[in-house]
Image (tube, rainbow, N blue to C red; front, side, top):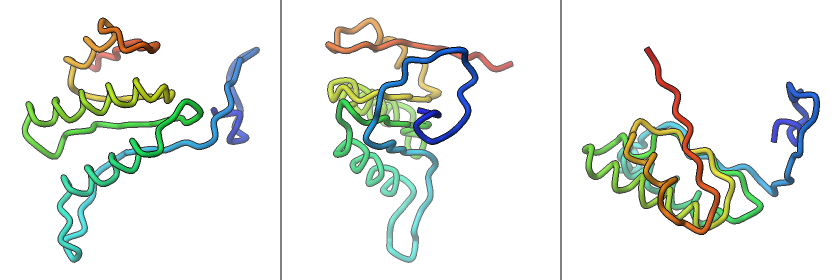
Length: 120
Protein backbone atom coordinates (compact mmCIF):
# COMPACT_ATOMS: atom_id res chain seq x y z
CA UNK A 1 0.00 0.00 0.00
CA UNK A 2 2.95 2.29 0.57
CA UNK A 3 4.06 1.66 -3.00
CA UNK A 4 0.61 2.54 -4.33
CA UNK A 5 0.95 5.92 -2.60
CA UNK A 6 4.37 6.44 -4.15
CA UNK A 7 6.26 5.81 -0.91
CA UNK A 8 9.45 3.84 -0.46
CA UNK A 9 8.82 0.22 0.59
CA UNK A 10 11.62 -1.06 2.86
CA UNK A 11 11.84 -4.55 1.34
CA UNK A 12 13.87 -6.35 -1.31
CA UNK A 13 10.63 -7.59 -2.87
CA UNK A 14 6.91 -7.32 -2.24
CA UNK A 15 3.64 -8.72 -3.57
CA UNK A 16 1.40 -5.69 -3.40
CA UNK A 17 -2.32 -6.12 -4.01
CA UNK A 18 -4.11 -3.24 -5.66
CA UNK A 19 -6.74 -1.39 -3.64
CA UNK A 20 -9.31 0.99 -5.01
CA UNK A 21 -9.15 3.20 -1.94
CA UNK A 22 -8.01 3.49 1.64
CA UNK A 23 -10.66 4.34 4.23
CA UNK A 24 -9.92 5.16 7.84
CA UNK A 25 -11.65 5.70 11.18
CA UNK A 26 -8.91 7.27 13.26
CA UNK A 27 -9.32 9.64 16.17
CA UNK A 28 -12.41 11.17 17.64
CA UNK A 29 -13.69 14.67 17.60
CA UNK A 30 -16.95 16.31 18.35
CA UNK A 31 -18.92 19.06 16.66
CA UNK A 32 -20.85 20.69 19.51
CA UNK A 33 -22.13 23.49 17.31
CA UNK A 34 -23.91 20.82 15.25
CA UNK A 35 -25.02 18.83 18.30
CA UNK A 36 -22.68 15.93 17.52
CA UNK A 37 -20.88 14.31 20.47
CA UNK A 38 -17.56 12.51 20.05
CA UNK A 39 -19.40 9.18 20.36
CA UNK A 40 -21.89 10.14 17.63
CA UNK A 41 -19.07 11.38 15.40
CA UNK A 42 -17.27 8.05 15.90
CA UNK A 43 -20.40 6.10 14.99
CA UNK A 44 -21.03 8.23 11.88
CA UNK A 45 -17.43 7.73 10.73
CA UNK A 46 -17.66 3.98 11.41
CA UNK A 47 -20.92 3.69 9.45
CA UNK A 48 -19.27 5.40 6.48
CA UNK A 49 -16.28 3.05 6.73
CA UNK A 50 -18.50 -0.05 6.83
CA UNK A 51 -20.56 1.11 3.85
CA UNK A 52 -17.36 1.45 1.82
CA UNK A 53 -15.75 -1.83 2.90
CA UNK A 54 -15.30 -4.43 0.19
CA UNK A 55 -12.60 -6.80 -1.03
CA UNK A 56 -10.62 -4.15 -2.94
CA UNK A 57 -10.51 -1.62 -0.08
CA UNK A 58 -7.97 -1.14 2.72
CA UNK A 59 -9.68 -0.21 6.01
CA UNK A 60 -7.75 1.34 8.89
CA UNK A 61 -9.47 1.39 12.29
CA UNK A 62 -7.82 2.86 15.37
CA UNK A 63 -9.20 2.57 18.91
CA UNK A 64 -12.85 2.13 18.06
CA UNK A 65 -15.20 2.23 21.04
CA UNK A 66 -13.17 4.42 23.38
CA UNK A 67 -15.88 7.07 23.69
CA UNK A 68 -18.17 4.87 25.79
CA UNK A 69 -18.06 2.41 28.68
CA UNK A 70 -15.83 -0.66 28.42
CA UNK A 71 -18.44 -3.31 27.61
CA UNK A 72 -20.31 -1.14 25.12
CA UNK A 73 -17.04 -0.19 23.45
CA UNK A 74 -15.98 -3.83 23.25
CA UNK A 75 -19.34 -4.83 21.75
CA UNK A 76 -19.10 -2.09 19.12
CA UNK A 77 -15.48 -2.94 18.26
CA UNK A 78 -16.29 -6.68 18.05
CA UNK A 79 -19.30 -6.13 15.77
CA UNK A 80 -17.36 -3.80 13.48
CA UNK A 81 -14.39 -6.20 13.29
CA UNK A 82 -16.67 -9.11 12.37
CA UNK A 83 -18.51 -7.01 9.79
CA UNK A 84 -15.24 -5.89 8.18
CA UNK A 85 -13.93 -9.48 8.14
CA UNK A 86 -17.09 -10.64 6.41
CA UNK A 87 -16.78 -7.83 3.85
CA UNK A 88 -13.38 -9.31 2.83
CA UNK A 89 -11.79 -5.86 3.11
CA UNK A 90 -8.13 -5.88 4.07
CA UNK A 91 -8.26 -4.34 7.53
CA UNK A 92 -5.79 -3.09 10.09
CA UNK A 93 -7.68 -2.87 13.39
CA UNK A 94 -5.71 -1.31 16.25
CA UNK A 95 -7.37 -1.67 19.65
CA UNK A 96 -6.83 -1.80 23.38
CA UNK A 97 -9.52 -4.51 23.72
CA UNK A 98 -7.41 -7.65 24.13
CA UNK A 99 -10.63 -9.71 23.90
CA UNK A 100 -10.69 -9.04 20.14
CA UNK A 101 -7.71 -11.37 19.77
CA UNK A 102 -10.26 -14.21 20.07
CA UNK A 103 -11.60 -13.29 16.62
CA UNK A 104 -8.70 -15.17 15.04
CA UNK A 105 -10.09 -18.36 16.63
CA UNK A 106 -13.58 -17.91 15.14
CA UNK A 107 -14.33 -19.05 11.59
CA UNK A 108 -15.22 -15.82 9.83
CA UNK A 109 -14.59 -17.35 6.40
CA UNK A 110 -11.67 -14.98 6.11
CA UNK A 111 -8.03 -14.67 6.97
CA UNK A 112 -7.99 -13.25 10.47
CA UNK A 113 -4.66 -12.92 12.22
CA UNK A 114 -3.91 -11.45 15.61
CA UNK A 115 -0.76 -9.42 16.13
CA UNK A 116 0.04 -8.13 19.58
CA UNK A 117 2.51 -5.41 20.54
CA UNK A 118 3.05 -5.11 24.27
CA UNK A 119 4.18 -1.74 25.51
CA UNK A 120 6.19 -1.36 28.69
